[in-house]
Image (cartoon, rainbow, N blue to C red; front, side):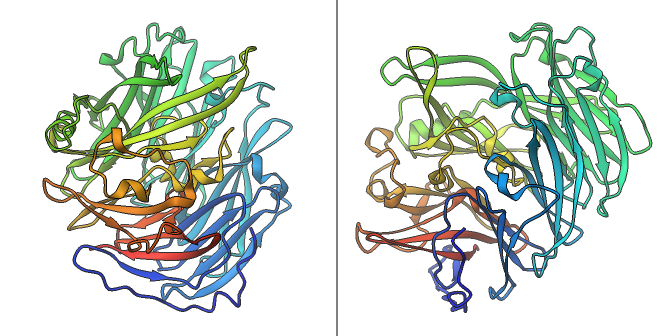
Length: 540
């Protein structure tokens, strides 16, 4: 990272009073735009804000602001335990606050052996409190596929400091050694560890697809097994490892027979003591002749599971009827909405919000079949509000068209909220500006994304929208979702001219629901001049 000068960060605050339902904004002094690498903003419960910049070869730069938004620390993390010169090929598996400390989980491969490191940081100074090597997997194949990239997972209990590490070894010949789970308490002490025994000896494929941690009591797993790549004799399984047990208790979701490739998001609904499981199962793919793009279709279901017996209470398909009604009746769009669920959010009132996004893969290959380029068109946003029983009570659609580098997997927003990131093939820094964010307060709900200023005054007609490919022309737009008709405005104020713009790193941002504060990095452009600011937005 090009260092943030301590002279520049003598803080000058700008608190902007806006009319109703627009957020209060606090800005830092301007600093130099971060160089190539990954950025992440992280808010702690004590009010401090951490700004991480993962360089490609020089370790991790960290800047800390206190709750008054004053800079209190700026340092570069290096180590002799993990290799700061190999950040480009590292995978950030998670970033969580545990026992009051920011804790980074990073996977690095030495000699193609993935190894997990835990880095605990001082919440005031960003100094390393302790760094540990937690475990590793056997050496990976030389030519591994993208599906095999993420093979160590971190899952934390949102209600406590307890967490689990799941080691997934896709190469293990013994299926009973493919998944290993280690359960930790908030003091980073091991509660339990066990291998996951395959529910069926005939499974050729067994994948870990989700987990939930219930304090110090249990770890719940979701797995997908099949006898072939086409889903022969496939099933989805729910399993539980209790703290005092050495083996998992398993249940089969019978309705998942012969499901194809399946992914999931799991959450523990504390409102009604239920495990909620959102599954996406591949059904088909369609290649578009003129563009060469490919759209994949999935069956989306929400299963409601009793955590004690693991019995299925009910299962509901995500049909998106209210989303389609909004698209047809309000936006006057003829076609049905084709977005894929990206995140499942359980609300205080026991309702559930499903965030969706339309995705089209565009892969260019040469005559020998080698991939020349790979991109993903991130299209219209869908927001579906579900009642406690899973029925849909409302739906909204917001049109956007963004072109991102690399192939985005379904449910990527769910993994992004955990701080998970990898320098995937084809990834570009401008991806930081793409996709969208959702903010829910006690009173309102908002959608944020960066868009070309030429799209702002157009109606929600996708045929008139300009495809976002140039981040220099982007401004952050905020939609207010309350009421039948959506309202929108420029989050950082109207740009004065086409040579000026204000856009934020959506990928890097962090929302603290307890304070209704959204923290992000904003890039201000005035002609050819670009500069960055830390920004805190408090929503009503």
